[in-house]
Length: 256
Image 1 (cartoon, helix red, strand yellow):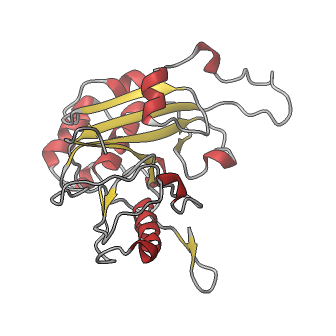
Image 2 (cartoon, rainbow, N blue to C red; image 1 turned 180 degrees about the vertical axis):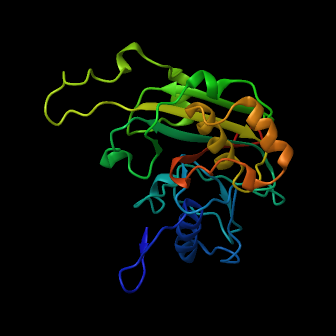
């Protein structure tokens, strides 16, 4: 976040923060065209990123290693490499993966989860959200229940550990826990994967899935919404705070 004059808080997207980092670093590394820093994904303020990619033209190659490049704050440079002159971080992307986190439960979210997930006070029916419906037109649109943790796993951790609902992850029995011990929320993760997405597409899809989970919408309702062909017919859009850009894939010798 940044703070404007007068104390007003301004939320900055991870995309703009990444561009600012490159511009600051570019003063020392002779970056060409300070305004021509392109990222793989444009996002709204409040959206998170486990990883993102940007490209920029430079006059010379820095001798610094990724870990030596300005890493304080919310943005960390974890990899730097040379790419062909026609490479474009946005238009050359072959696949993008987004995650959306929902925490279901009556208790307020902890400080550690604030602005990191969509808090849904109602219970969510996982099977209803997993039901086949016309909205599943992406390469992947899945809903899973995972262990509730304030540290959302990276895509690599998620693939390696195969997060699934654990028998030890059920909420504490009401009245059986001590003072200050919180009941756990049920954590649901929506995974959306495709080459590209329309504006607000993932958040709109999650809004529909959430309404299916609460019982406010059925599969027939979803078909009706799609036939209406207007956003106003859909459920309220999910807030930005639960959305994470997970991974961007390219058709190179290895992913960027």
